[in-house]
Image (tube, rainbow over all chains, first blue to last red; front, side, top):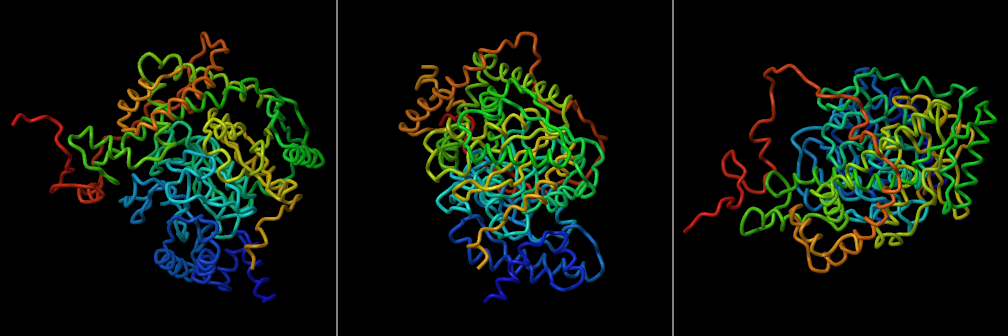
Length: 494
Length: 98
């Protein structure tokens, strides 16, 4: 028993680079590694509810293929590495639902660019991970299938919308995952589950084949157990794609090269507006400890101001609901998914959407349609666009004085299931620290920096300049190496 | 009140959503509170500020207008809830007098 536990811990504690070495040396096969994760999912996911669907046959087939490629001496970052995939990326031949009833049964005829890139690299697709319906939410409670649990405390939410991804990574139910982030949907669940999550600069990763929520804010990024894995996955998925007209035609650096570099002379901006009332003491303390750690490593602290921070949540919920109301018009019971009977076409649309959409999705479509409707457009949508300009300028000014900005990811640690579900505004305000970054299109990541008194993870947010994911990762790696924060809860190491 | 029941019903119609009576009630209250919160934006002077609709300064990305392969009709329609031959089938759009 003891030996088995040691072996399990060894595999779980290895990052992708170390696992890759084992695969290359043929000390383990991808089939064995895949089986290891599938067995873990079967053992633990009954309580965690991270996967909507396991794709066991597909996984075994991909693992065999990867083993064949390895045997031929092929060398790719992710060859044979088992991933869980948020159920929002179109994946050829695999049902993609966005955790919505309206997309049930939808089998995409093509791969999203990120999936295509992972396939070329030889990843293994374990299954589809839970999320808030259409990525609208901060807790996975808006999934039409199930509410995922936080592996550190099963009575609490894992965060959202990529809550299935963060929980599965944290509990060791996959090696790595892909999430999406519109207002914090990678960073907040990563923070609340004690994993690493990175939202790249808007345009850095192609959105082709990503089911759209709010197109001017959505970005795809990795959720992993370590900063190294995060850099590896980003290396694979980043880059220009002609299939996405907002994709940025700039070369991508090798992010791995920045890991292990010192941070002497790095200027760290601390925005006073983020130390608000309502921030838990333990979060504040973890934040201050992290700042001192960076200072001890030769970084210097600059006090900065982001004066329009307090307006970000209001701005965001105008912009994102407006874009969502437009994007979700495509779910009309004609081309794919659910269809209800109706006496004419309008009636069919309305009944299909009544049956197919959950509460939060309908709330956002109504709000978004309202802020775009004639007579309210200027007062809401146009006004929000102007405030968005001011929020962007805040960051532009701040980055004249510093290289990265540090804030907490969330003002509190994971809240209880059911605690905020009846109060949408309270739920929206839990993303107060992550939302401004999407409005400004900047890169930002969440790195575990400790635990609160109850043993719940706390995430540090590192915000970078446009296209400067590299320096964020560089700083995150220093924090990770020094803090050595515990990764997988004990109950998932049996 | 920032928003009334009637407006919620009308906007839901524009968004092609049928709502249950209790949902109309609930959404009216919740959206009213959210709009009230959004009022805080009115305290900022945004005169002469250009709105941002997109953070990346790209405009009108063009490609060569060439012939390329695309999805087959079969692939494009295979997810349709109802189809007839190569077409998506929908309920009547134009009223026909009988």
